[in-house]
Image 1: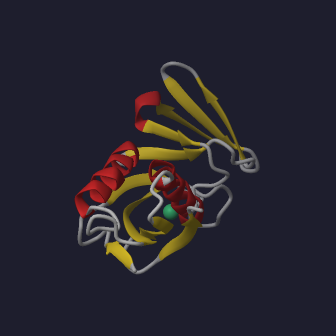
Image 2: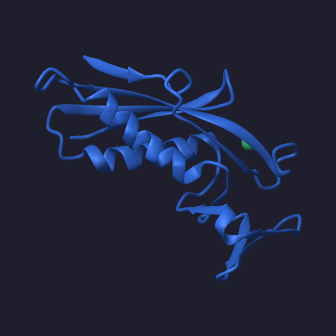
Image 3: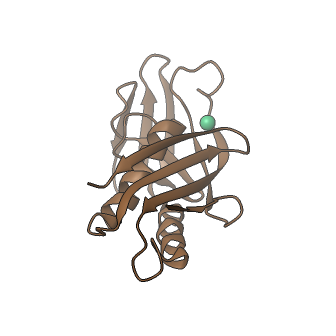
Length: 159
Ligand SMILES: [Zn+2]
């Protein structure tokens, strides 16, 4: 059995900007509205697999950390990042493009790319880390839509 929360319908969304280094089109800074859809598979425990409200709050908190931010991938070897207490500088190595952002506008994530695939795995790992002690939950599937009609999905098994 599973439960599902649709990110568009349940307003589990965030807007953010990023770029994919050296991509012919996505290499320019641009934005998306993202939606996080979650399926949780498991057994009912006291009626529920997980309370919808609890799951929605958990995902909302994650979305809030990304909303209206510039998302940068700390582990992307195509860029070099330098940060001080005021700003974050990103240089795209191959093209020598240089961006400087106010530090409060940026979220630096421990991922190798800001692709929907990597962002999806990152979000799923945050959800999984909060649910890992639930012995009635088997797996978590997250789909991260990058606009309506396209997205990436991944499943994490909890046991
Ligand atoms: Zn994009």
